[in-house]
Image: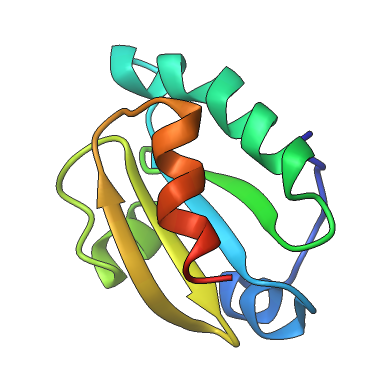
Length: 105
């Protein structure tokens, strides 16, 4: 389940999280991004104590998307202790995403 929180910066969110953060870089007009929403909800629920899932709308935050070289949507980036450790581009099933994440968390 996605939780809306306010942070003074994206970096603060990454650095203050006690668990790895999976960032979904998406756009509202992107069909595959919309398909990923329920999948990310499922993964977030199943890994709720081990992972935080957040969504970044690349149209609203182009600076963040540019900083991390986001060119394909959706792009998922897993951050640990504020550093990107895994990048996944494109849509996939929940089971596939879980396989990618379980070896890293």
